[in-house]
Length: 225
Length: 116
Image (cartoon, rainbow over all chains, first blue to last red; front, side):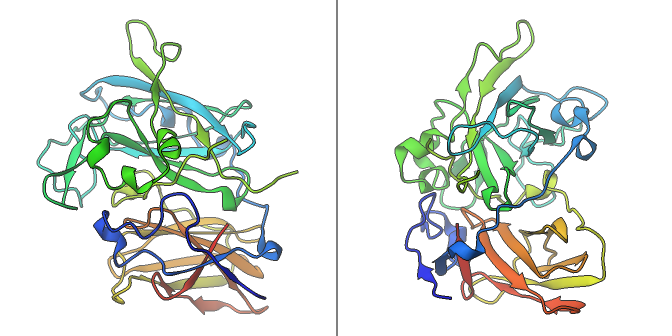
């Protein structure tokens, strides 16, 4: 089998010197997947894999978490714009103060006993998903002097084939930290970067209750018939 | 349509990405994820898939180790996510029929990976 090397596969290049952790981890030997190894299969999830309460991150403890309650919704689409139904979407995030409920996070911001920051759901028949959560705070990291991550929610999406798998981060519109964040800026194409930013959505917003943000996710799917 | 770009899974993924077992069986795959200095990567998450073995997910431990037990399969697709990886890396491991136990270290900067 002859392997064709890949220089820059699009998406953020693995080798992004501004993001220090790439230095010892970015792979150096990348090859285009040969046609004969393309695998159109992938895991299938069902209602038994998720609890409906999993999609409301504000409901997992006795009390309500502190911070600004928000609704995040959108659709999961293939590269042809067709919805992907019944696929698993997982999210995790910092609390409103910018602190993750994870032992490795040493930021001095307070933990919230009423917020873990993990959720999941299946898309419906039209590819829609919806989470209720609180807006995560920005937080410092040690990548460079005075480094701060823009507020974001981590997303993990499956799609139809295991090869469609996407892990990404959703940002909020107008964040002043965009220009200073090497992870966001690792995506060099400005149009592709826009895809990472949710939009405020009055239709998703619920009166007297919570602002809504829309984040559609387009997977880089292999041709599918 | 412009695809949504990948972003790193970051160091705190364990909050949201729980480990998941494969379809139960006698086959075993285990190994370490290693960085370019040969050091274990303690914050990687390894996912495997095949129609026979099903889907599995395992976060590495402080020694960079992962392991799966699964039903016999001719091969497993593997994807690895970690802090410092802006996208996952993909590889595949093939099994001889009847193999029960396979050790497979994933050396991020030495091994060859596939891009779809």
